Amino acid sequence: MKVCCILNAKSGGADLVGHGAIVDLFSRHGVRVDIFKMRNGNSVVDLAKHAVEQNYDIIVAGGGDGTVNAVATALMGHPSIHLGVLPLGTLNHFARDLDIPIDVARAVDIICAGHSKAIDVGVVNGCHFLNNSSVGLYPAIVRLRESLQTAGYSKWWAALLSSLRILSKFRRFDLEVQPSDGPFIKRKTALLFVGNNAYETAVTKLGTRTAIDRGRLWINLPISQTRMGFILGLVALVFQREKPADTLIFEATSLKVSSKKRLLTVAADGEILHLKPPLNYRILPKALNVLVPVPRSEA
Image (tube, rainbow, N blue to C red; front, side, top):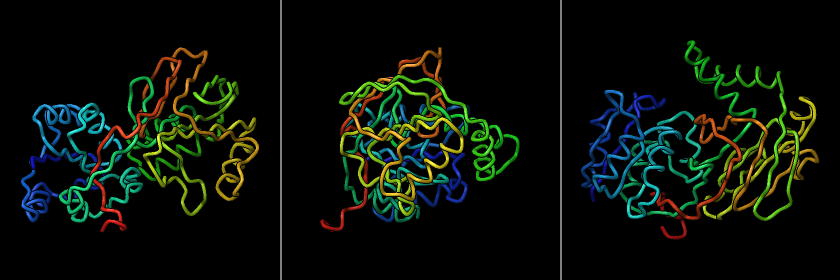
């Protein structure tokens, strides 16, 4: 088994796990792992493409959701290569939804056990996402958060301050949305959220997914006309079982999003993109093989 690990030194937990420690954890399973680190200006994408060319059986993404996305993108079209995940980021949404533990030793155990699962991948104008993509408020929050972090704020303080600042402005824009299996929608909105499969909204499970292999995009489109209405709609979505009246929630296999703007700022797994409309979203069913824990029913 030929294995490499692409380690993003900029990820939140990467500085707590040394090169040697990762090598030792794999060697306990009789597996030799090659460690690729970013240096001399190369990127995770560069390293992932190089790893694919070297015919590795397993390519491990050591970092947060952005790192996992970059490695997964390089693996698209190479079904024989499996993705392993060492969750070293701050939130690790993708690993959490696949029940991959943040404990590095346990994550290595899962990779070496070799149990794989084929999952869906979302695409917007050729850019892949494993978790979600959005237009409007969230990309604006991410851009401001990054600038605040550059100015010296911690990630959590930057996230809080940027959220409050962007929400205080509450700017809506016109979107035309045409789902593959639903009616045409034309609305003013402050946010379009497109998930790779359905997201939970109940307060105890907020932001999680129970499955990533059902072949559906999950679309959330708040249509409130005021900032307070928008906030109350989010609160209602979290604390009520029924969908709030001023939020459209539906599923589709593809989605076309049109706008009069020349460029739209789009977030995909937390990365900011500037894309020319229309935005063409689609789901790629079971397009990526990921190493995950063995289901309890099979253990």
